Amino acid sequence: MAVLGICSLKGGVGKTSVTLGLASAAIFSHLRTLVVDLDPQGDTTLSLGVMGGAANSVAQVLDNPSQFVLRSAIAQSPWNPQLLHVLVGSQESARHDGPSYTHRLSRLATALAHVKDDYDLILIDCPPSLGGLTRQGLTACDSALVVTELGLFSVSAAARAFQAIDDIRTTSAPQLSPMGVLVNRVRARSSEQAFRHEELLSMFGPLILTTFIPERSALQQAQGAGSPVHAWPSRAARDLANRFDRVLYRALRSMKAPIPPSLQESAGGSDDSSQESLAEAFTTALTVDPQAVAQTEVPEHQETV
Image (cartoon, rainbow, N blue to C red; front, side, top):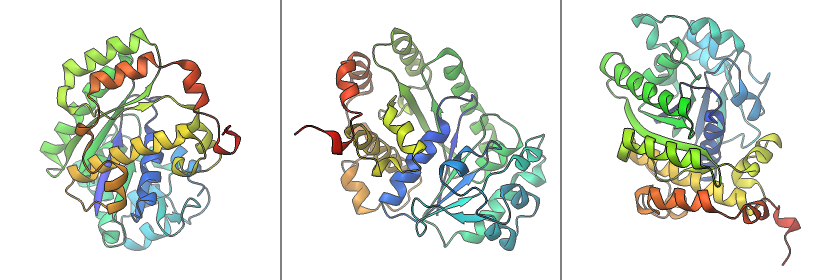
């Protein structure tokens, strides 16, 4: 069982959207997946269609990490009831977001150990802060993916996230390793983003994933319709799906987890370092024809042959 944390110390960078994209990639790769919604806002739970689908929530699991309580807080997602389950989020979990003491940090890890044979992958959507919930989430992880966008405050938040990961790794979670930085919401023709991109490279170098996620309405359309992006009928969605496949491939490799053959094929058979260079990728993204981008949002059934 591989456990990946998705984190950011700044809200609004699309962390939950990335979690949903990775969940979509996982089920379309036939991986038994559990998504843990640690964010008190519960957006991941809502997006995966399981509001009210469990007797308990992650808040009760953190109160009592027993197997019975854990299983009573897990619900099946309509995205794929057999392959995708959700440890339901709740506003009540906010009471665990204060100062965390050593004896509390391992509660989520203790709970997840009860289902280690039930899932191939666990995705933990951490809150956009460094409180008790994020620390408990990262303590349970094998690897952590930092999500950022190309803005001043987001870049500085990514630096703080890495400092937090290093602190947690040296105290409560020696198995935790940083997977890297995923740049999200790349916009066309943005000189500010180009500048922040260079800043990000100077700070993190090879830790920046060369695969990035462009800003596309197809992602919001799929989520709004309660659909995984891999099932959304547009060319833009297919491009996004391939990008999330590549990020998932990189994540599984970083955790030395088995990689399904279908994911190896869709991700190009290698990690994203074999894709276009980061500089080339952003040059392409920042100079793309806006009209061409708009055309990629047309669903397949409306395309002109």
